Image 1: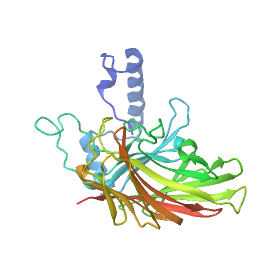
Image 2: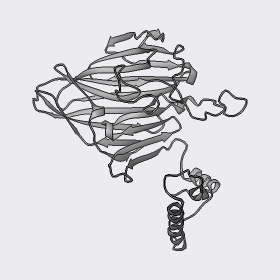
Image 3: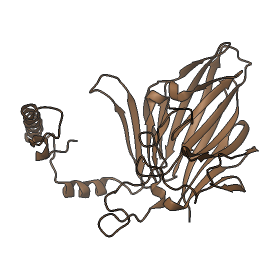
Image 4: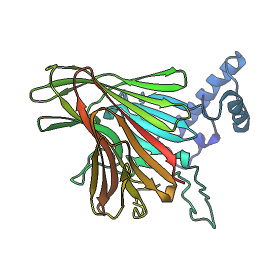
Amino acid sequence: MMFVGPGWMNKMGRWEAPYELLKKSYWDGCAYYGQLKKEGKLVDMTMSEFADYYREKKTYTEPECALWRDILYGSNKQLFWYCDPYMRAGVNMDQGGAIFDLRPYVAKLHWPVGIGTPHVQDASYPFLMQEKYRAGYFTHYAGEGTIRSAKICHNGEEVDLCLCRTKAHFSQEGRSRILTLDPVEIVFSDLTVKLQTVITFAEGESNIRIDRNILSMSDPDADVTINEYMVGCYGTTEYTEDMSSLTLGVDGQAIPYEYKCRELAADNAGEVWCKLPPIDTLVSMTCDGREKKGYIKEGYAFSPMFTLSYTGKLQQKEVFTTWLNLRKAD
């Protein structure tokens, strides 16, 4: 599918390539698709026609999925995008399958835009995580920016899966869309761990399931600790919003967000969560794993994030499973 328009041929300097090259590329592209149309291999539509076609072919809850591979710069970097009526999520295989972008469409916000509204120019739907606007993986002494990843720990050593570049394969089983990552090898001073991640999006469920499977260890009897974490901070730009209306909790225990860097933890916790009234969203994590412990952490003024996390133990052939859940707050 290709979107075409005369904007490709403007002379206002919007693009990094010279006008002559842009014009030739546009003409060659249109000629190629025009020939396919003559051969009966292509249908051209206006946007309104495509919208009608799309409605006929797609159900309301059916997601859009795209496993994208960079071919422009030859890096072979892979990104995966998932979008349905309840969320939009981005997964980066260059960061071990970390979720770097998350939009909670489940809240179905009324977000008027334009003159006379609270959002004169900003039409973006608020994010819970966004690596470009909220720093992403660890960048300075304040710790992580917004990201959903995991750390593997052994005898005082720690490796974040954000540092484990890999590739992924997409599949569908029933109503589930599955992203299966190639195994990564984590090397500690006295232990080597082979770990595989599987990320599952169940249609209509507004959650993301992540399975971490220990395929093998150089010492089959060894234990490793896993820390599944989400660092969040809502907004639409790089400027932080007021977090003081948020509430963090572990099961029934809760603390109001006051920028005091406090923590709360519980063994065998059923749920760790954060309620965000400004975007009418409740985000939570649940877990199925050995010796699981849930904890939450508030941030402070210089790093105004919040953290939801589960830790647990893993041995060879064991699986640690977490769900990232999105709900409308009220």
